[in-house]
Length: 217
Image 1 (cartoon, one colour):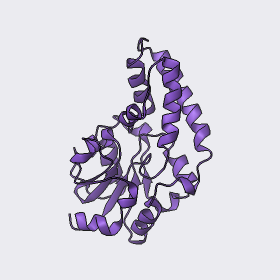
Image 2 (cartoon, one colour):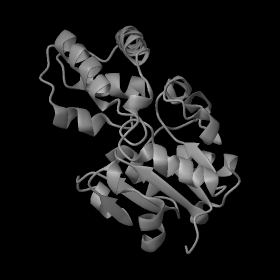
Image 3 (cartoon, helix red, strand yellow):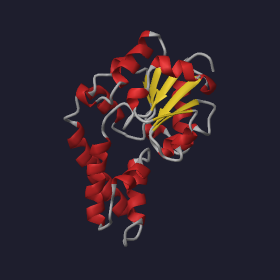
Image 4 (tube, helix red, strand yellow):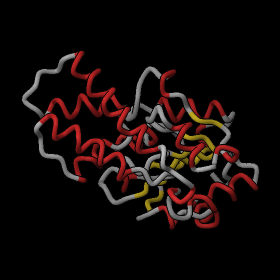
């Protein structure tokens, strides 16, 4: 790839500084399930849907996997998270990402958001970035979540760019595994073993600029 024709971004930890909120909510669930829960555990859950996160945490507890329990905890998790994201503002955009997104927009490069969160539209609106985003994948329409590549392929199709001409950015292991199953140029933010398999790995969002990205293609 010599030119960027489309960019697909994860949201939590890539666009929005919401990982601490996710950790706070998941920690509350862990306490209810009487299991230990660390920031490293939270990292492993990044990119999973709400239900898959809950199921993963129940597996670590002494409780049986029960449909009613999954629904109860999923609702509890969502209600708590909804309250927390009400206070999001432009100040909660990840470092460097507002300028990166705006430069892509000015260059007429379409941007899609591929997040496992059902609250993606609300978060993007709170960050005042919706006018720069071409498409936000509705996870309710997907058959499979990350690490399946469906969400990224859906995003590419929506912005009418071939996967091989897209750049996809992730900070979660599940999402990166999905990207690696496509022809997209992958950018990993973080230092996990999975993220290190990306075409380009950077330690944080401040390192992601249009100029640096072009030089890596």
